[in-house]
Image (cartoon, rainbow, N blue to C red; front, side, top):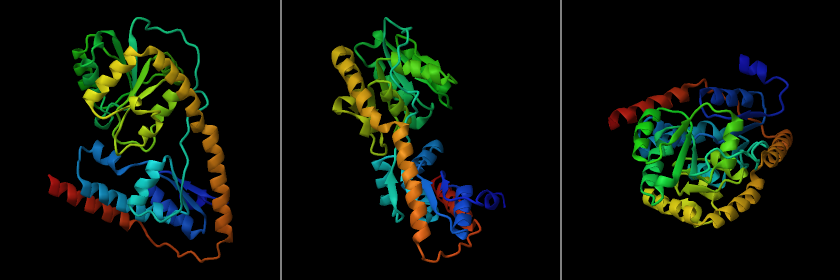
Length: 327
């Protein structure tokens, strides 16, 4: 009833997440003949990684459910990257789709800050402290660097692995700095005063932390994962790595080439402009207008949805059965 009330006098419905509330909202919107736009923000692997599962069957089940019950009921699907769009199409997306970056906020840009750590090569890592972000592997890579005594690692984020990572950090000659719940201004300061940004995320539909870093002119080293869109931001192979050993070699390379690092800062400042949130906003507004226009001129009678949520519970039962068999 609350959803029906909220959708009165609405021109377009934009649903962000493919869970029960979102699915129910789409069904109600269809009953009211309203145009529906959805966004692809959640990979199946985001769910399985958090649960500690490594089953392609479960990944396939989740995507099949998301696509059939959510994305294929949309008039338009917003994908944050070309990679994201290809992933949905690989799982039989039939609805129209468009690539629009999430975009970084205007406040992320090069600013002058007094650098607090002046005698070390500062490596910054930003993200949830969890398995799929691989901060433990970043620590291992730095420990193998020829210059580990000259490197200060700063890890920004919180999560279930904080305690383990702090213990592991003791292997480094320079103790890592862990920060959480910092202000946005302090995060921007870190982007502007660090030397290198490392992103070891396995699963990303875009990679907001990489976007924010490059918008401030901080060159990244990005894990070349087949399940991540973040490699799209790499200017060349020197900004990509394949494993711990390769990451360690690339850290040494950038430490040894400070002039090239300065040039990379300038290049990233320029290339990041295309991902500014202003550009994304313009594209999204046009997508709304076009979708509303098409819906108004479409004389095809929409089939009334009668799904009362049973499909969601059937999905959860199938999910539980697969987990039980794996155990």
